[in-house]
Image 1 (cartoon, each protein chain N blue to C red):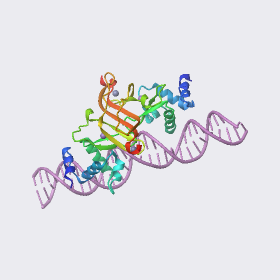
Image 2 (spheres, each protein chain N blue to C red):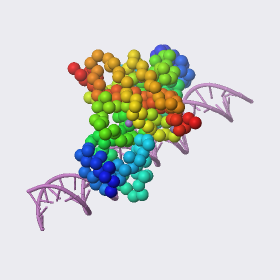
Image 3 (cartoon, helix red, strand yellow):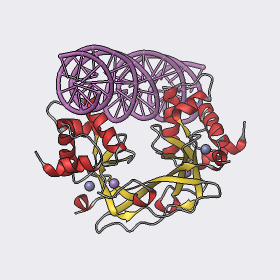
Length: 137
Length: 137
DNA sequence: TAAACTCTGCAACCCGGTTGCATCAACTTT
DNA sequence: AAAGTTGATGCAACCGGGTTGCAGAGTTTA
Ligand SMILES: [Mn+2]
Ligand SMILES: [Mn+2]
Ligand SMILES: [Zn+2]
Ligand SMILES: [Zn+2]
């Protein structure tokens, strides 16, 4: 049993069930964000609902964050260790129009916006669409 | 028959059918973006498919643009007259977490992003979520 | 051990979006 | 004017991601 995985769960106050360990393992191996249907396909035999609720739990506890890239299915990616999903933690995401992969651009924070008067900001979703470096060659 | 409406359609090379005139009329009256299900409710008796295809036609011809604000239904709003939906025409959108309305912040262009090497930009979707000035009072 | 709570799996459902197809209206050609 | 062509409309059915209700299995607590 991977101790690292359990520590991550513990760090976010998530009980380390077998299912959750497996899901976190898959998420850790991803280079790009993954959707619920894609996650389903990673397992021989796993129930959609359980995976769904596992992702919800992970998200609520800020182990992962969700990304709506406009493709019709929400994708998920690991948060950084210190992430609290506050506005200052937010980064830009990139959707490749060729391969369909969605990447966290962790090094690119979401730019600050000057909203009109009396508009309060809670969060920002910024998705850049284009061609990724893999597909550009 | 509103001449203004017909001119707008003509300007975008869209044949001015009765249905299209009505839909454009509704879109013109909106202060915030509207979804297909919402548009359906604006009519006593109208077919979802026709409205769907009308919106698609409008979007293809850049009379309107679509906004995925993450609420699960895509919303639509009129483009400005000179808009060609190029990256330089893009603006920020605002989703109010209280009333659910989505507004075009036409005066706030989407900030420029410095992408990693070999990433090509095509378009950007930037949605700010928070509380709008109506709900803030 | 018994009770309380949590997690899991199955089925069914919801809803926005989309497609296929037949019909209808407008416009062209003869 | 009649026939042919094109595009718009309306209806039904479907698709897929997401979500809920509920029962049973597993785990924790007293
Ligand atoms: Mn991310
Ligand atoms: Mn807009
Ligand atoms: Zn790519
Ligand atoms: Zn509001």
